[in-house]
Image 1 (tube, helix red, strand yellow):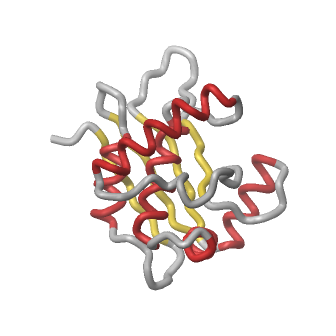
Image 2 (tube, rainbow, N blue to C red; image 1 turned 180 degrees about the vertical axis):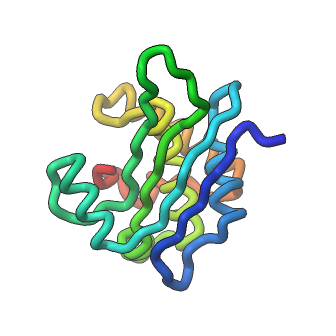
Length: 157
């Protein structure tokens, strides 16, 4: 039995969006926790991504992946990791601009978002190095190359 349950919500249709089973595989691999948990992965278009990015981060543009860690009220323990909202058009554009396969970039966004849900961050250089090294290792296990080789500076996420 898997340690991570993935609630897959696809509210945007486009060619190249990974299947639910692919997203599950990527998310499960990136789950570092020992205890079972659940994550919602929502595939959206630019409007929903921009609205959420503006509401929660004060940035009025769509972005590749938004991570919303679940914060349980005091005394409540619920096995929820949180939610990932991934913007399909942004992921597709970035993959093309960064000369990556669509699958490789999707896998990177799922792994990247899952690590954010678990407290990993890339604001400070030291934290970024730890997070990026873990991403590279996990993506290699999936058969994808280093996502940071093509470009040294990743857009904020």
